[in-house]
Amino acid sequence: MKLHDSLVQIREPWLERVSQNLARGEGVRQVFLDQLNRFYDLLLQAVESGDPGWLNPVLTEWAEARTESELKDEDTAVSPILSQIAQQTLIVAQEELETEGSLLLVNALMPIFTYAYERSGQQETMLRVAFLSSELEDARIQLDRLDRSKSNFIAVSAHELKTPLTLIQGYATMLHDEIQDKPEGEDMRTLIQGIENGTRRLQHIVDDLIDVSLIDNQELALKFQPCWMNRLFVILEDDLAPVAEERKQSLTFHEFEGCDQMTYADPERLYQALRNVIANAIKYTPNGGDISVDGRLLSGFIEVTVKDSGIGIEPEYQEQIFEKFGRLGNPILHSSGRSKFKGGGPGLGLSISKGIMEAHGGSIWVESSGQDEVEMPGSTFHLLLPLLAEPPGDTLSNVQPLEADQ
Image (cartoon, rainbow, N blue to C red; front, side, top):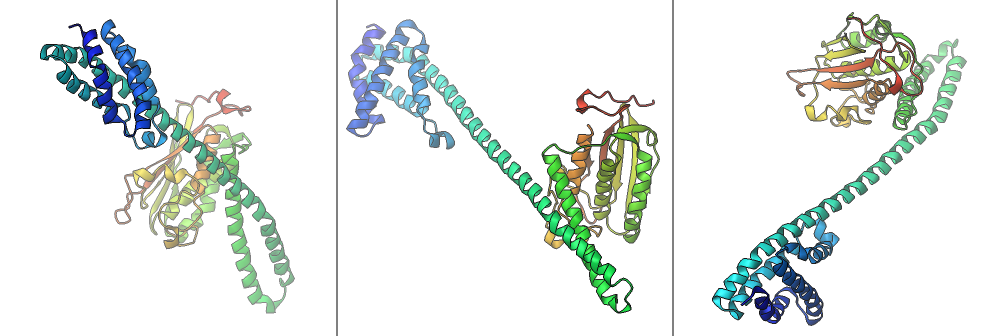
């Protein structure tokens, strides 16, 4: 008996058996029976032509009929159906055909079912990938929207705080002037000094929030002018040496090749970036520790390094610390002093330094073997700044770096 005739002979019992196993309820069974009839017609074509691709249309429809919950739960829809169809086909062939005819039919159908398994598996995988890609894109859009909301909140909050802060500072100054020459005002001067100290610190936080907002919105304007790294070191040493001395730390600025070379940059912003990094090193280095500022000349760049003998940073957190509010640990457990060991703060300094360096066309990163408050492995921050022979135009991408002296 020909394979076509064998398939025709077992069609009715096959449809009955498969529909009963795969569908429950008369209504569902009738709908599914239409699908099975179509599958069987295509199966006949595949057997006659020797091309299992005839099954592609129905396999595609079955794969695309998967629900969102099935895609989310990674459930397979087509493979169990094909497994049942193949199993029932073998049973019906054994029941309805002679042994030889049954074996011939099964041998002819196995490659077709194998192809159907592989094809449906590929399609379900592609659909799963497309679903996950869509989910990831939705998540990315939500995260972008959340990040924009955070940036807007930071910008609005910072600007709204400036007005009352300016009023407090103004009234504190007026009170200070009012009692300036009055001996009985000593206690009042102490109170006013406390107000001024608090407003100065709050002003610093507000300024940092505004800088973060400018960086987030790519609105950080740089004023490029001739700049020398060694001159910035002098100012930084004068500014930070008293803080280091208070902590009994050794703060050393080294001369290196290229530190006296002129480049175009924004000195004020570079000072801010370097100060944030050095202040961070002071903060996370215990009393009596060492902080060393050094560097080297590279081809087209100056690299500044800030090395400390502090607690170090775990590798998995070495990118996180450059994110805004990226402080590590529980800030409630730490001191609120800005220069004290592990002192508190909003966690904006390194984020601002990163934004400033990248706005210059440079970069910043940190190296540390890990965090250990006993062994004190320390950290080394690297700040890479392009050497520019002339101030850039609208974009840094068109600026040719100044060739470094070799």
